[in-house]
Length: 555
Ligand code: ATP
Ligand code: MG
Image (cartoon, rainbow, N blue to C red; front, side, top):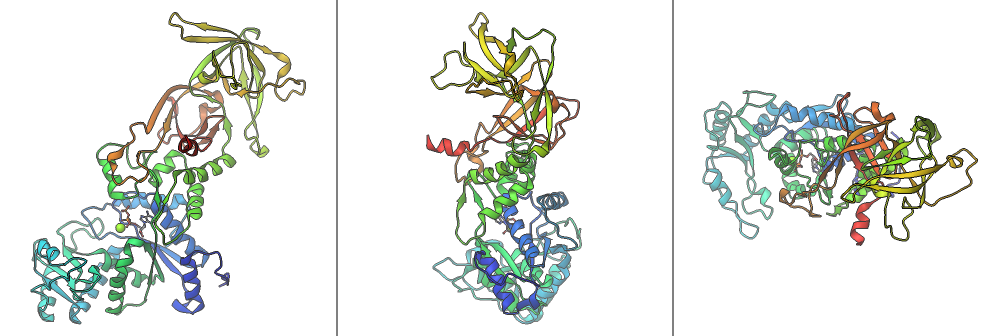
């Protein structure tokens, strides 16, 4: 294996891995895992963990398991399993043949638990959940030992077998590690390892009625799979002594090492499956894949390219410091990717009709337009131009301020890829609202024709009124108003604006779900995945053209 000998410039996790390798640990293997609980959809925080674990596995020619942590059947489902797999693949990673489930190891967990019992390191506690909780002590006071703590090995074995065979009600007994009720670290105060749950499991059905708790199942799974570096978020730092205690007290084939890093927190965003599922269950969003959701499926539907999410995760990197990342950083990654790769198109969000009086009545002219200003390989297309066009309502002002370089009475503006037009007359209805604008065009000013020497300051986008398609546009802003939301109570009432009857160039009539464009001067848009062929097109705004956040924060 060739590994960059210098750890310089690498994050602390990669440095640790390099140092383990240089010490010859783990037979030079690097195995990681991504262990989601299938109780909801993956979010941007998980994306960070996926990029880290799969990224490391590939850099070190190792492997990364996708392991479903399915030890809590009442909250989990196969639907979530499928959604999670789809999201990991879409992000650009592949577990190959290393797809596992904690439930694959239920028998191993049971045997490990029995080993702890036989060695006097675990016991059956018959206290109630409340009694166990109230005897755990506090940060300042030690806990109290359970009256059942000194049961004999034989009694514990018998009880554990009977727990497995279904003789007890939920909560009647639990298996606890026998560690130290006065340990400074509360996680070491005889933590519960197994509980009774008379629930059907999505994979093992009614085979089990006792289920292991996370710390136990996770540690043993890591050891069975030969995970060398078990990467988790900082809240598990206090669990590491328990992780190691379990490894110390069992005979297992491998000894993994837990390393913690800080969670990814994004401003205006909740990264907790539990809270996100609340949004879904209360109907506050369309579903897990609502384009405003920070879920991978939501971001996909929003039009974020997978490569942009990977780029963002890479830029954020891994550290030990808790911090909150600005949304603008994620949007910048998205914008950069889209700027390079999205074809341009013309779309008028709020159409205002312009009649070009000196243009021949039934003439339709084809204007050449490049699909990307910097990338010729993306080719060209034609735009029909005719006597009646639509321009953006706010590209015309009757009483504009001094530096308004768009259309105004008596003023001139260039139509993108077309001619210079001059505003001759404003037609209004009885209420004084503008109905249409009458203009003249200068036939000698066609873009790219070489004959046009005249220049005007402003260029605006437009579509031909007869040759255009109507579309619904969904404009998004953040789902939550607070920069660091703690709950979902702080919903932004204006997170979604629906614009009907936007006018798009007719070339877009055949755009398919998932197609992305830059609407010139307006933003990046994607055809919604539920937009049906033959019906009015629905586009989601992926991101604005520029960072409107920076601007907002300045004012
Ligand atoms: P949630 O609270 O959203 O359910 P979780 O940690 O309980 O998060 P899991 O399905 O257990 O969800 O997470 C799988 C992996 O993803 C874990 O290793 C976890 O550490 C990691 N992970 C979860 N949230 C984040 C985050 N915000 N940043 C980085 N990694 C995360
Ligand atoms: Mg978890």
